[in-house]
Image (cartoon, rainbow, N blue to C red):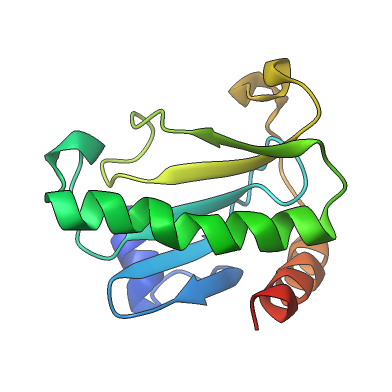
Length: 129
């Protein structure tokens, strides 16, 4: 069972942004930049290109309004999309507010304050409503 499956189950706390019957989104606790979020299918599949076609397509469709909500809250040129796929064996999209393509770099990641994440999550969820 991956750490993401434990987060979905509520065994590990997170700053949830979105949830439906097939997908889950939350803020990264080691963000590359403020607002860095993950979007995951609830079905635990390691490699993104092993997802069934419909789930792969819908993962991106679910990510779009989340990215727009982040963009509305966090000043940035755009939301960068990254699929690294090595750090957790559960496929996931990284939505990262960026100013430049060089901002999509895990070397920029660092611990975030839980209270700041909670506030940011609340603001993003409000934009999703």
